[in-house]
Image 1 (cartoon, rainbow, N blue to C red):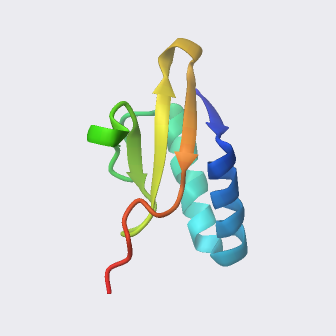
Image 2 (cartoon, rainbow, N blue to C red):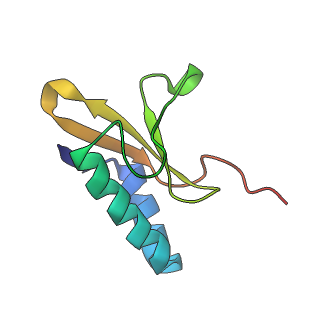
Length: 90
């Protein structure tokens, strides 16, 4: 499947490039896995509910998630965000 990054996801990726190379490496591995297996694989894929119904998430780490939508009719995955799925706990 083709991976498409939304403007927000591109902004998140640029943020991670400036802040943490290990996160960028993890994101790249997750995106590659998503392109091959959009609903299974690395990062504990989870179908989301409620306000994010129809979307999926994968864990980057304990605080951040990749949020994406699978468009089967176009054989593509639209990545919506890569930060702030959960707020950091103090």
